Image 1 (cartoon, one colour):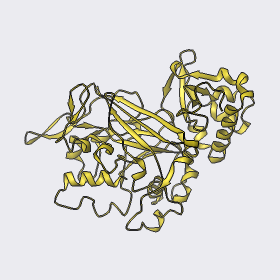
Image 2: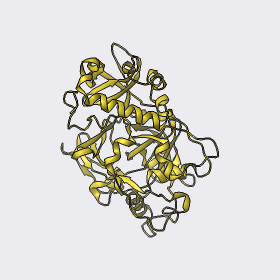
Image 3: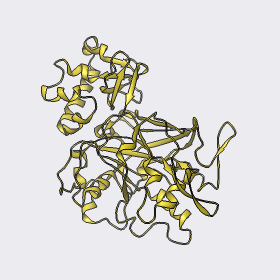
Image 4: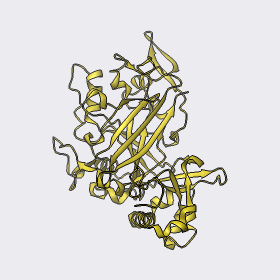
Amino acid sequence: MTWVEGAEGGPFGPHHLPYGVFSTRKDPQPRVGARIGDYVLDLRGLASGPFFMPWIRHAFHAHDLGEFMAAGPPAWRTVRLQLIEMLLDGRYAAQYRHLLVPLSDVRLHLPFPVADYVDFYSSEHHAANLGRMFRPDSEPLLPNWKRLPVGYHGRSGTVVASGTAIRRPAGQRRADGGIVFGPSRRLDIEAEVGFVVGVGTELGEPVRTDEFADRVFGVFLVNDWSARDIQAWEYQPLGPFLGKSFATSISHWVTPLEALAWARTEAPEQDPAPLDYLKESDRFAYDLTLSVALNGAEVSRPTFADMYWTPAQQLAHMTANGASLRTGDLFASGTVSGPERGTWGSLQELTWAGRDPIGLPDGSERTFLEDGDTVAISATAPGPDGAVIGLGEVVGTVL
C-alpha cells in the first residue's frame, strides 16, 4: 500500500510512475516530476537532498527529461526502484509529503525536447482500409507493406503538448474541378502510440531489434493531425508534407517501458517472414486499449496489440541504413486501428472517407472535424495484480 492518498488501485499507482514536466504559479520554472495518483512528485526537490545517488541528482535539476533520458537504463531502473520503495514505505511519508503537488495546482509542459520525428504506418487493418478506399480494384496492401515498416520523416518543430489548440491548416486541394488554396475541409485525427529514444547512437550504427529496451525510454500518446484533402493532392510521388506537418500533439506523461511489463503480449504472426535485420528473438506487442472521444463522446476504441510491425522493428528499420539516433527522437506507430469499425483510429476510416457520418449525442453529425471540435485520445494497459495503468490523454481543440 502506498502512503499517497487516493493512489492505491488507481491508474497512476506506485508501480506506474510516468514522468512529465511541470511548473506552478509560485515557481514558474519547469522541472521534472513523476505522477502518483492525483499528485506530481517533485523530483527536483527530491534531488536537492540525499535521496538519489550523486550521479543521478543533476539530471533532475534540468528543465525537461532530456538529461535523465540520456543517462540510460541503469539510471532509469535505479530511480524507478527507489521511487517505488519510497512511495510504498510509510516511514518516508512525513519526510517527503511536502514534495507532492496536486495536479490541480500545476501547469504541464512538453515533456522532452523533440530531436527528430518519424511516423510509421504499422497497422495492417488501417493500411488495408485505406487501400480499399483508394484502390478498390487492386490489392489493399502495396507489395512493400509486409516487407518493411513504411514510414516518413515528420516535422519535430510542430510537435506540441496536449492541450495546445490546433489551427486549421491551409494548402492546395482539389475543388470544383480545379486546384484551390485554402483551409482544409477534411481535417482528421490519427490515434497513435509514441516512443521516445533516450540513448543515442553514432552515425553508421544500426540498432538491432533486441536493443529496443536499451535505447527507448518510454511510451506516450500521439494525435498526428491530418488534412486529408491537402494530403491526397500532394502525397504523390514523395509522400506526406503540408497535410501532416502543421501539428502533432503528444500527451504530457511518458510511461517507462518497465511499467508496461504486465502489458506485454504476443504480437501478430508475420507472413512472409521478415528479413534478418527485422527478426525478433523475443517478439512482443503491448496490450494497450485506446479511446477516441469527439466533443466528449467516445467514437472508437482502437487496440494496439493488433499492430503488424512492432516498435522494436520500427526502431531497427529506422536505423538500418546507419541513420543515427539522438536523445529525444520520437517515433510513432501510425494510426492504431483494429479489425472492426468501432476500433478504427481515424475519421477517414470511421466515416469511410466521409460517406457515413458519425452521430454525436447532441444530434449533430461529423464526417471530418469542424472548428471548435475537441478530440481527446486516452489509453489503458494491464497492470500488476489486475490493476489498470492509465497513459493519460492527448487533447486538442480545432481553431
